[in-house]
Image (tube, rainbow, N blue to C red):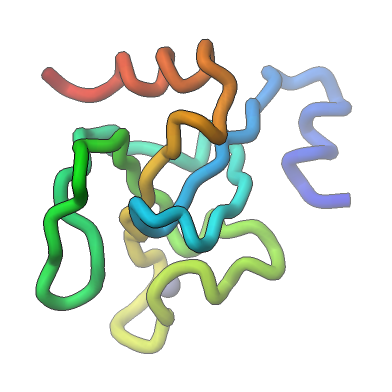
Length: 111
Ligand SMILES: [Zn+2]
């Protein structure tokens, strides 16, 4: 059992799971606790190096490499450069998450 599951069982606040992807093509998705995400913003560019515009704005967020679930260490950029934690840019695909959850997360985008 992982730590956050243990906390939930102990009666802590329910930490909902959010599906996030590395890019707008959603080729790889992982599930992370809502509390691990911060820096919600409208993502218009994605990708390593020269960034390319994505077809339509998506809900973007930031995840620390230290909050990656076990077994998902290869999801983000490698941690070879500099010291952890590294910030990983992710997107929250609307059709992969519950509508209420998506709406709530989206409302956290700084206007
Ligand atoms: Zn790192």
